[in-house]
Amino acid sequence: MRHRVNKVKLGREKDHLKSLLKNLATSLVLYEKIKTTKPKAKAVAPKVERLITLAKAADTGKKSQREVIRTMQKNLFDENATRKLLEELAKRYTDRSSGFTRIVNIGIRDGDAATMVQLELLP
Image (cartoon, rainbow, N blue to C red; front, side, top):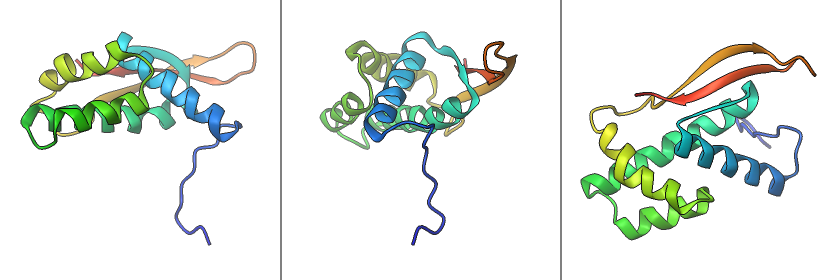
């Protein structure tokens, strides 16, 4: 039985979905804001939140640097994104415990009437 199990589908196979979420997370970390559809934003925001929390744990010494880097490399495509999380974003969010991302509605896409949003990291 699958009671209370939330699965993200987005109409894709498992491998394609995993790759899509890794791409979105990498872009969000590198550029700090991305435009995407609302379901994709809702799927990738918790992943980025977990990565930032993990970077903060490495910064404070709760987890080893090696373990954190390996986990980030599993969830991101670019080495520069991992570096930015550890060096810049962990220090930026030291006083904040959660809520590192914001989803802002920007309208409806003309082609297929999908709800478009801007997913951004808070300053």
